[in-house]
Image 1 (cartoon, rainbow, N blue to C red):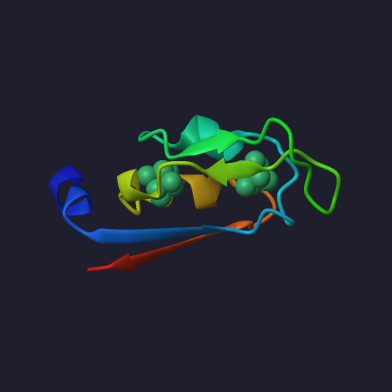
Image 2 (tube, protein in one colour; image 1 turned 90 degrees about the horizontal axis):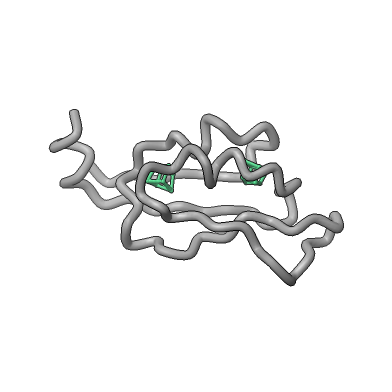
Length: 78
Ligand code: SF4
Ligand code: SF4
């Protein structure tokens, strides 16, 4: 499964205004794609997760599954 995941194109879309800053997605990502914002609050008053290294995303969707607020979408081109 790892080889198949590594070979496909993936896109992550994170809606910063749906994020409540829990950090679950950052902890879940095996590739270090996501980090927590340190200074810029979102519309809901939280410091949201940020997609820092989009090119590293494999499309595994662990981050999206962990997000309690459905703030992350993963699109994969097989
Ligand atoms: S889909 Fe996987 S690799 Fe991509 S940001 Fe989410 S957890 Fe990380
Ligand atoms: S898991 Fe969802 S709500 Fe929590 S920091 Fe990540 S995007 Fe935000």
